[in-house]
Length: 193
Image 1 (cartoon, helix red, strand yellow):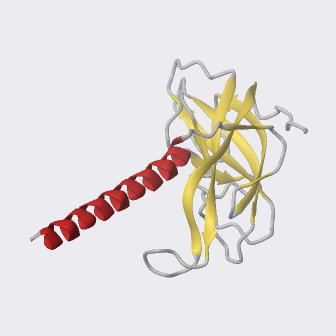
Image 2 (tube, one colour):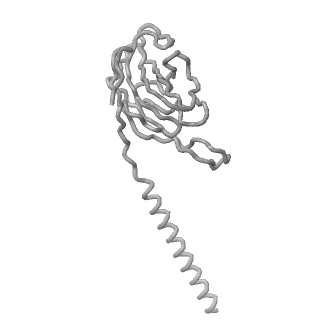
Image 3 (tube, one colour):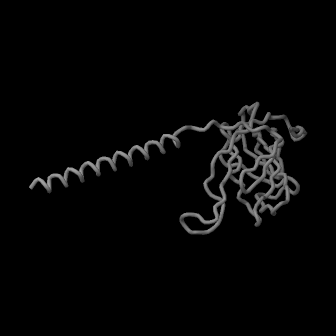
């Protein structure tokens, strides 16, 4: 009778210690992950590696007439952000739509244009730097911002993802933010580092 009570007591003690240890380890690991990392402020004109892309923010400006073949309605303006982008992967890619995200005051989805020939959202070749323009429409009467603040997003290369077991760029995350002064018109000069 006492033998089974002792074994039950030992089982409860060992189970309690194991549970406590698991909670302590889980809490400690969660504590390290919960700390918010400060957002890195990136300098305009400096190259940034985002994983699949090497990008260099060059300039931002507003226009009140069509730019790169994109028409504007009467009274509307467009906010244009230009960056040099180089594909660091081995294949042609169009995976640049979320590389830059405006943090406020504009539509979520810009038009993306290749500057040299005004083609919309082309696939960029590996290793070839291209100048791209992100164009947001501003409603009639809207005041353009003095500074365009963009979040620069990156991805991590995995040899095998967890779901399909194929290689690729995954886990998009914010690398930092870049604040671009907004000029008036396409004659705005590029920002030099």
